Amino acid sequence: MNDLIEKTLLAGIGALALSQKKAEELVEGLQRQFNLSEEKGQELLNKLQEAVSSQQQRLEEVAREELKNSAVRLGLVDREEFKLLVERIERLEQRLKQAE
Image (cartoon, rainbow, N blue to C red; front, top):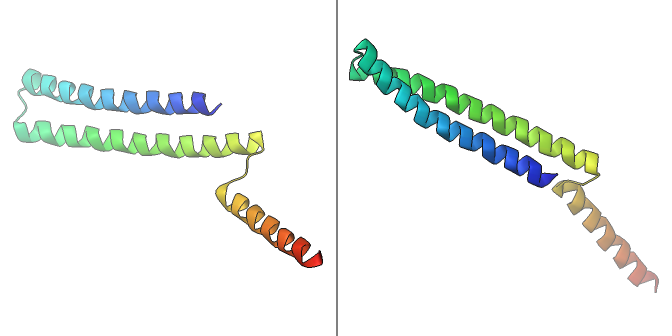
């Protein structure tokens, strides 16, 4: 299950990287086709980069949420719960030693 999620994330990140390259190519093409200035081309590229960055952040949020939901479905505990369980076991072990 984690492998599937990891592969999906990597594919998404790869698509975003590819999108960045395609965005640069698109801007270069538009600059030539519409005779855009370097400044206007850079402005357009910046807007595209912001959009890609925003989508990347959204993808990361969705991935984190899906990982969290998967962990719950699998019955896994998070670090904080695990830490609390370890502390509880240590206290119980101490009480057992004192009782002996």
